[in-house]
Amino acid sequence: MRILVNHVGFEASGVKHALVQTDTEKSVWLNHDIPMKFEIVEYGTGKVCLAGFCENVGSVEGWKNWEFYKLSFNDFTVAGTYRIKIDFSEETVQSWPFEIRENLFVEECLSDILFYLKGQRCSGEVDNHDCNIPFFGNRKDRVDVHGGWYDASGDYSKYLSHLSYANYLNPQQTPAVVWALLQGLSFITQDTRPTHFFLKSRIREEAAWGADFLVRMQDREGYFYITVFDGWSHEPEKRMISSFKTQEGIRGDDYQAGIRQGAGMAIAALARAYSCGLKGGFPAEVYLKTAERGYAHLKGKNTEYLDDGRENIIDHYCGLLAATELYKATGSKSYLDDARERVKALASCQRRFSDSSNYWVADRETGRPYYHPAEAGLPLIALLRYVDVEEDIAPFRAAVEVLGRAVQFELEVTDEVNNPFGYARQYIKPLNGHVHTSFFMPRDNETGYWWQGENARIASLAAAMFWVAANYQNDHLEAPLNRQTVPSLINYATNQLNWILGLNPYDTCMMDGHGWNNPEYEKDFPNAPGGICNGVTGGFSDDTGIDFLPSSAGTSRLHRWRWSEQWLPHAAWFFLAICAEYHCRRGGAEDEG
Image 1: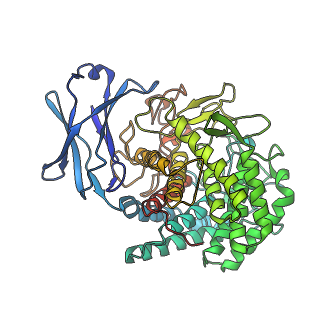
Image 2: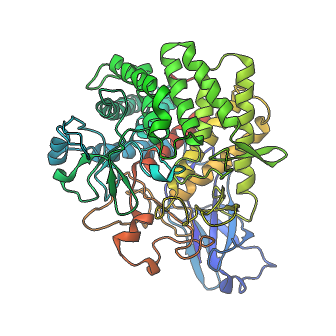
Image 3: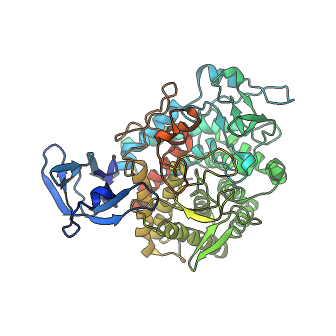
């Protein structure tokens, strides 16, 4: 038996609960006629501050032989450090110590994420090589693409995106970091405490570092390069601009990035950098010029760069964000018109799940459900940013309808089965299987190899839900949801943060340097403080199960990365989520930029 908590702690005015995890064999020993009592005790003194009873919340189908009991303490708001204690049979079980106080996540986590990003900056011998880098294929000139961040613990390449050959799973990588930093900054800009003044300065500095890199990643013809790739060799002389396919890293010379392949997000990030008046190695005007040039180029070329030659939902939400940020930056109605068309395209990617909800399809022609292990919240986030700038009532209401039905789906699919952790569920289709709802992505998918923990997915959904809740609190949004939905949205979002920070079946804090049981990657490629690892997956041999660093996978690099390797998108979306949580608790105060 163990007591699972968020290892960092809980916001004093927020949702607070813990779970007791036992197995079914031990559970039968418990006297279910006598409720299990818990105590919250002051750490250090043992003083009992609150007592209550646990509720049996059952098991999750396919999740080992675990059974769970829930204990809630939402009304306990006294700041301090505590443990939860339960007397069980002849032993006393205690949780890890945790804090309760206001602004906990922003104050404990934001700075460390920024230190993590700064530590991931491309530098030294590798960066020197990137100042004069070749292309894969017949092109003979070289370009300067220095800067940016290393992608992951064991991957020193730099990505706008990858997995293009799979069409439906392109993750937004470096550009998403830049945009998330700036959107997160807007959520905390109303905080005028001196410590936050310096924090905001560091956010701008890190965003400028990334924006400068995106400028260099644009070709003289106007397109963006998709990847600076070393073939996972970690050898500077093997770095070049190329695409690649499969786990073998087969290079290609189709390195022009389409909208879904990182270019749309790069445009959005650069336009946002201009709107925020960012000044890095380039003046803000260069950020806007680069964004507009890239957008104009892709207006006529996007489908040429896509592996299957046609747009899908990822193009639509990345294109929506790009057009929205350009409209915000320039006031040009042509960008607003394009954004409205992208909203219509997203609406056409919805299918009925229930009377009040719609799920997304990735492809309108095939009806393949949209699922994404790195950014499932991004369609919602793009719509939220759009409704921030749309002033005409008809398109505004149309977008809110699309948004509301999608949000309702996320709530419904997550509550569809017994789910003590409130872990965000999804609608999937294995490549050779049938459509169904699931906790985790399928191993059998279009990439042929890529499945991993989904901390970026659940963090992006948390960011979206906190943002939606903030907008309903300040009456910026209207039907189909309403203020009564806000507690459900906040609970959903908080559950995702809890999972990442230790309230998960493996009692592991996924953010290095916080909590306990931080996962280790490889001795030669250690994880860094402030970074977040990939996380928990479905079963190693069965999608319906659950696993985290299973012994059956061995210690080989071939699989270990799936769970314990850190990756930029996890940090980016988690950063945005905790900023959005702060924004939500402040009632959705107006932002900047």
